[in-house]
Length: 234
Image (cartoon, rainbow, N blue to C red):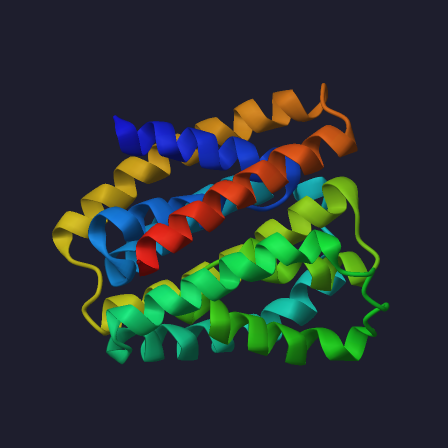
């Protein structure tokens, strides 16, 4: 039941704010079951959640941008997932904490310059590698897509498409390296039930929230992530 509720909360958060839900899931699971289990469980569940979100928002998808980013992000996530299997838990926890640190300082940074279309695939490759190692795909993809000129529903739909590619790539690596046990697969399935429900809740909420309020909700979630990350590396 707790996993379903976590999925609902994560799906709603990401649909409202465009990112954050997956990172909350990853950090809570990491604190309970360890970073490798958290990476495997979250990858499978978030693949389902982002596929559903992409289907809901498919008419708003910016296909050229999504294809260019996934061209690099998919193989990058495969490689990152393979390396995560042999990295010590302590190192993975530190990488996850570093991703959370980026989440907390991102709103304080100046607006990034416009990214040319040719640079999307190389940038996607680097993001894919780090996502395979430490999760946090929404956080890492967000500035890239925003600097490519996307916003609103187009940004959220394209972010979901990129996330589908990265989660599929890293999940394949986790399975091949033995990180996805039967018990973890069951946990992922339970969590995946809540994510589409959260997407629907978030879609309804998004019509009643201003951009400023959505940003405040997201930053509050990132502050929670920071606290969880500190707990995970303590």
